[in-house]
Amino acid sequence: MFLGTHEPRLDEKGRLILPAKFREELASGLVITKGQERCLYVFPSSEFEVITQTLKQAPVTAKAARDYSRVMFAGAHDEIPDRQGRITIPQNLRTYAGLEKDCVVIGANTRVEIWDSTSWNEYLADREKSFADVSEEVFPGLF
Image (tube, rainbow, N blue to C red):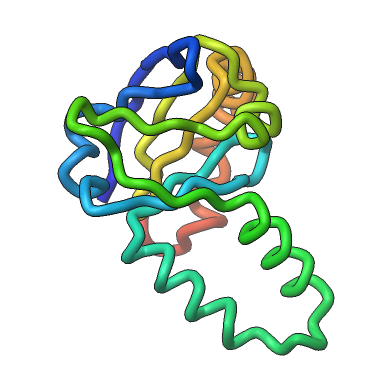
């Protein structure tokens, strides 16, 4: 499980240092792809395989499933972090997420998300206003 918020920076080569607490789970390989709200999703390779198997079950005749799969897989990039825990984010993914220098890396349960710092702060400010109100609707009986 990935938890927490971290604020690394991209270097001039488009590399980002993964938070130390995420490195062990991502050390054997990861997949970076486009996420919702213009962030990037980072999955351990094993978790991405689970997602791949789930998407294989969707009928080819389902337009939404085709669209989602195309965007997710066409933008996907796999790699293994280097010894310093750095990953290189391809230019097309940096452009999609608006990543230039200041980033926010958050733990989001089974995945890591990479956000442009300004975009994350705007997203969080907007969503925190309604966070307490929606918890009962999203998780009935849990809280």
